[in-house]
Length: 161
Figure (spheres, rainbow, N blue to C red):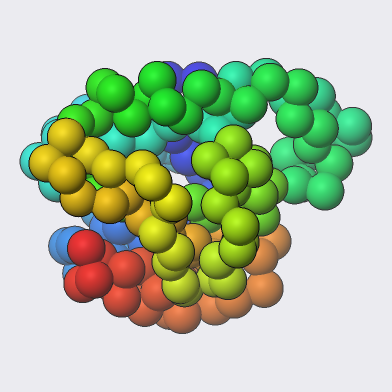
């Protein structure tokens, strides 16, 4: 996979396009039925957005990516990842499995509900600021929330950040 959320059916990049450019198709290449990787990379660099998986290895128990059919084989070393992001303030998850995995890895006692955040106990960035975990709704079309409500959830999160 060259980048995150490459599945053309997933709405992540449409949500970002709507939110930042008032155009849900801003990152869409209709001719090739894919997303515009170069524009996405430039956008993420300008906004200071970084993406990574909470697991380095998973086992698909069925032939899909549904959280309930993914088994975590090896969680990502989140602490090592944090060392590469000295000014990190928020970690954002978009799925139940990712949220539970990071909570387990970082010993976060309370799993945040969708559209809320919790401070990560005893984890500070290089500026001495506490790092927090924010949970967004999934951008998958299988997640039972309208596109407009997902955009609003992302808007609220970015306003907080």
